[in-house]
Every structure is written in C-alpha cells, then in structure tokens.
Image 1 (tube, rainbow, N blue to C red):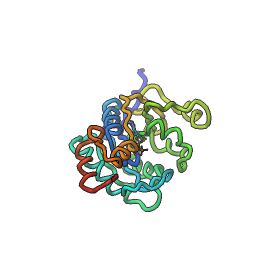
Image 2 (cartoon, rainbow, N blue to C red; image 1 turned 45 degrees about the horizontal axis):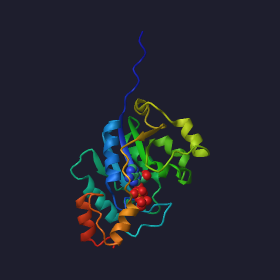
Image 3 (cartoon, rainbow, N blue to C red; image 1 turned 60 degrees about the horizontal axis):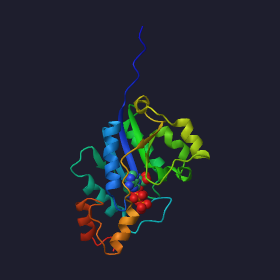
Image 4 (cartoon, helix red, strand yellow; image 1 turned 90 degrees about the horizontal axis):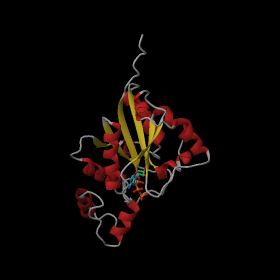
Length: 219
Ligand code: ATP
C-alpha cells in the first residue's frame, strides 16, 4: 500500500512594515517571493502604530495609500489595511490571529520579514506564539546576518525548514529563509534624499513619488 499523499495547502503571504514609503526593495522582494513560494497572494500590511519605533511622521493613511498605488495592476500583490482599523499599537500577533480566522485552517499563512526584523523579533509582543498562527519567511538582506547565538538562533534552529514544500504540509509553524535579489534600498535613505531636495526617482514607483509630491510628504 502506498503512503498517503501529504497535504498541499494553498499559501497566502503577509508582509508587514511601516512602508514609509514603500519602495522597490519591498516590491521586488514581494514579487520574487510570490513566484518562489507560489503564493496565491501576498498582502503588504502597513503598520498603523508600530510598537517598536517612534510613530512615523507620515500618517498611516498616507503610507497605506502609497502601498495601494504601488501594488495597483499586480493582482498577486495587495494592500491589507487591517492595522489601520484597529485602535492602539499594531501588534502583528493580533493581525495573524485575525488572518487565520479569515483563511481557516486549510490555507498556509506565511508572514514575511526581513533579516533586520528577525534580529529583533524577540521584542515583539507574544513573539513565540507567532508560529502558532503562521509560518515565517525571512528575507536575507544585504548587510544583515542571521543570528548565530541566543534565543532567536535557537528558535530558528528548532523551526527552520530547508525544503519549501514543508510550508504546504501544515498551515503554520515553520521558518524558511529565502535569499532574494538584494536591493540596497531603504525607506530611511529615501526620506533623507527627499528631505535634502534630491531625486528619489527609480528607487520607488513613480506613482508613489507623484503622491509624495502632491501631498508634500517628507519635505
Ligand atoms: P526604514 O528605513 O524606515 O526602517 P525599511 O526600508 O527598512 O524602512 P520597513 O517598512 O521598515 O522598510 O520594512 C518592512 C519590511 O521590509 C521589513 O521586514 C524589512 O526588513 C523589509 N525590507 C525593507 N527594505 C528591504 C529591501 N531593500 N529588501 C528586502 N526587504 C526589505
């Protein structure tokens, strides 16, 4: 008798961040992940009130509007504004619980984060519970190494899977590391360029730059 086929779940991704503003580093990584992991969809989810950094000067509504513009025309990417609808600090765990309730247990959920975010994940609210609700997909980023010691390194070693197919065998609980095209673009640098009156063209979509100009952001 042959062994029963392992389940292959559909995968949906969620990529949180301040997106202040969204840029091609985020967008290209998002699209490469969609194709690499064959995600049905990847949702960029702007944080309304990031718990671990100062409130961005640019409002959550503006940041979400820029994400909406950036993903327009790419049906595999979407903007998820749930954190703008929730009062108080934007805890990722709360969003994952909501997403899991919406998707049901028959869909794999992949929470995407850059390597820089991974290095601080143990400061996140209820961080060890994140894997109860989703897989975590870490994007290796230029200039950032994976933790090699400490509790995050142990957590990584315990849950890391080398075979991407494992993400389809269960709805949550695995960590995968993906090396994508490195694009050394950061929102901090874009804000600095704009504040200095220089051009940020080609670092982010023109539609987002037009929005920034029309709304006099990052002056
Ligand atoms: P800031 O410079 O303001 O800190 P950022 O450009 O790092 O912003 P965030 O909105 O803080 O962007 O990042 C959201 C997520 O996107 C994080 O998990 C971060 O690691 C990831 N990320 C940011 N820039 C890149 C990039 N160039 N390539 C891949 N991932 C990125």
